[in-house]
Length: 225
Image 1 (spheres, one colour):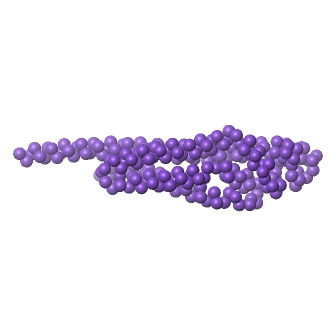
Image 2 (cartoon, one colour; image 1 turned 90 degrees about the vertical axis):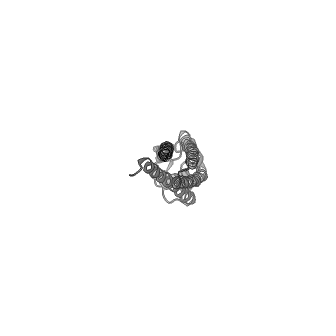
Image 3 (cartoon, helix red, strand yellow; image 1 turned 180 degrees about the vertical axis):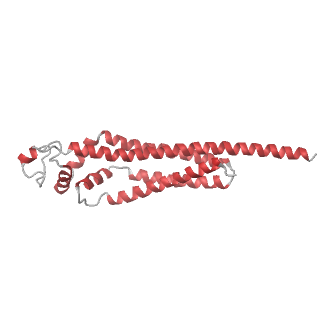
């Protein structure tokens, strides 16, 4: 008969290690590509935001997830509950770590306009041009603060004065983009919580089975007299 408690634990353990693989792959790939020269305004805004992300923390977290998964293997291969308890503590630590990364990204959304202003003034005119074109805007707060870059969207001071500044569309773009990322991080914390619950259920199940085994052994011993 299939042990449903054990099956639930194995499924959640698989989701847990898959989460680590996704986090590791995303962190490494994006960290290597976010400094590439952009060719389009949305790409430029996205990559400049990525440069603010805690990718090193994400990589460390992913490695810790793999270490935790390795701790669950002897827990599954044997009936030793000590390995399960160790894995549970490691999952809790990982959940706190992942939550910290998510909160860090959430805080970024609270100061998005200030972050984008620092990003804007540090970019060369070519990158500002790309973002002005993509978001149909001129300058940052307005066409003169800081001054716009002359391009097809903002061909003259008079035309630029009629356009909105880039702070509003960039702020909206950044908030939506980062919201999706930190929501995914909080979803990963949810997987951690469910895995901890599955581990607790498996610990209880193994304890009960061990108790019944001892009862059967005692009953068998009495029957020999």
